View (cartoon, helix red, strand yellow):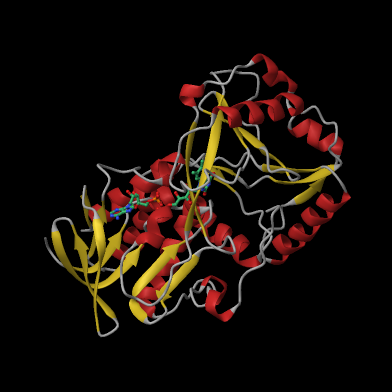
Length: 385
Ligand SMILES: Cc1cc2nc3c(=O)[nH]c(=O)nc-3n(C[C@H](O)[C@H](O)[C@H](O)COP(=O)(O)OP(=O)(O)OC[C@H]3O[C@@H](n4cnc5c(N)ncnc54)[C@H](O)[C@@H]3O)c2cc1C
């Protein structure tokens, strides 16, 4: 197998974005993935939400940069990323949740997202008339949030990178990295050694398992997320915003003529990579949906169309971006904690800047630096946003 300036490990949306942004800078890139083709990892399991409503400046800024990249995506890659700004609507059930939304809104406005606004119960009812409404005291809405098409973004980046000379090899399992004098010299694969000038870990939920004597423990853990899909239905319009209950995180959206229901649970004890859908969970999430969106009572769940996948969790639910401490040519773009599709266009650009220029020039990425864990500089974790 050939050598490359940069070997990107993993061809999910993150690896694809990194590859395209590097190729655009003239870097010779080789992407390796053990899957048979695009979408073997979490990217194909994502529901396709896009939002800039976060509770930290860095996450809002990542989303705004990603949104700008999405707006030029078709021009850049020849592919429509399907950005559909139908909005994200957050619903509060008490004053504490309203206050959390208000303080997040302040962060959003400071970070350059003026369009997120408080909404009254009447406005909420106008935005999503199907809501039962009881127990809701107010909320927040952002009209520029909405949806995108995860696989289109992945394939758009990979296709455009390939046209600029990037090579993508499928069916190649990476077993580890070879290091010499504190630097990566090769990726070790089932097909042999691939010499490289630098490597990028873009292995999604599997990132923490990469074998390399770096002395740095990458804190990324998989977490199962389940999605219940109804049978095809028209009870909710396709432009329904992503609608999220702050209290327990239950949320729903309409996609491909079905309603998707989500509600976070801790995953399968002792089997972190298990992605089976739990029938008990389907009943629980359905009960929540029936209480809150009564029109769904007449729409059965389709267990065959429901699915689960893995989030790639970091300890503070923020991405890990930059060179590995102690191994300056092993770059990390990991731990997006369930926001990886929407942030990939931004993180790919920023990683290319770090790799080519020595530091990110578009945004200050210090809050995402891998050193933050050892230094005790974790980002504030909000359970709500
Ligand atoms: C149910 C669900 C809903 C989600 N909804 C959203 C959403 O609405 N919006 C959003 O932004 N994000 C969402 N996410 C999160 C999103 O899917 C991830 O953040 C994103 O896909 C991560 O991309 P990635 O490229 O890092 O990982 P992946 O897409 O998992 O790619 C990693 C790649 O690495 C490869 N690989 C792994 N190990 C090896 C190895 N040893 N050798 C070679 N190749 C290897 C895999 O085959 C895979 O292709 C959701 C996730 C789930 C599970």
